[in-house]
Image (cartoon, rainbow, N blue to C red; front, side, top):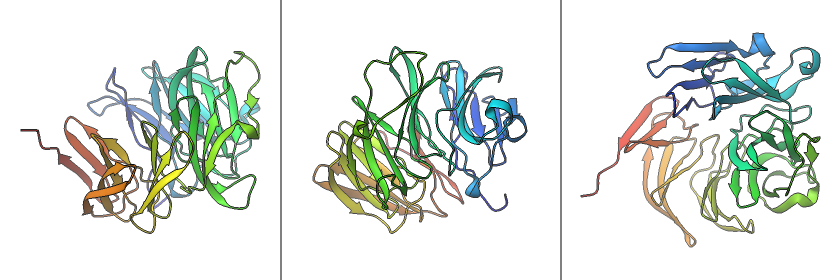
Length: 326
């Protein structure tokens, strides 16, 4: 792939300080904090990873002693059919621990980053997949627990958890209408039987829906409010209980990949065209405190560490230092 970019972010293990990254050309690597390669896998050669336009790769997560990533693969034997599969490696040795296949035949790729919580007496994660499902998987052994089918294309946004629901947006054609895009809340099943066959949730597992359309940007949840940037550049505020869109603020005409960050009562909202907005949200609307025009396109999300804000564009890596009180 030439003149392309890698979508997936790196992840840092808080215990070892190791860094894990899936590259555009199919390598999955572990680096020390000093930048030395500790171990690596060629996902194409080892597991038959397929490639897609725009260097679409997901961000891995660290869960306990595991580092978990996903991609679409077509290998041999039981893993011969193309599926969106999750792979768990021992984070220190790089040895494969489990492989999970929670969906059906994909029509697209997906780089939804899994979100983890404790439920059903174990650790589970939720993620979108390339077959248009929202899935729940046992994070310790890879056992698929349930899935909910909601679109005909890949679900690229990452979900958020609110009480006993998982809220997930997508930007592809809905399975029950010809319209594109939707945000839904899926009611989490109660008790489950461990080791049982994966449950396919029925349509009435949907608690609410709204017409928010975001192809790849992921939402952020603050209390009972969900903030999300649509593909047409609108920042929306959604009631997490009911799905009602409380307000929308038009920022620009287009957004792709970039997701907002919430910190200290403010939203830091990057837009694809290169604009960064600092917004103070309330139930009455969005108060724009500041905006910046940056060099290059913004396809990533900002992050905060040790009093600094970092944001990567297609041209530069930016860093700002927060002023100390007093």
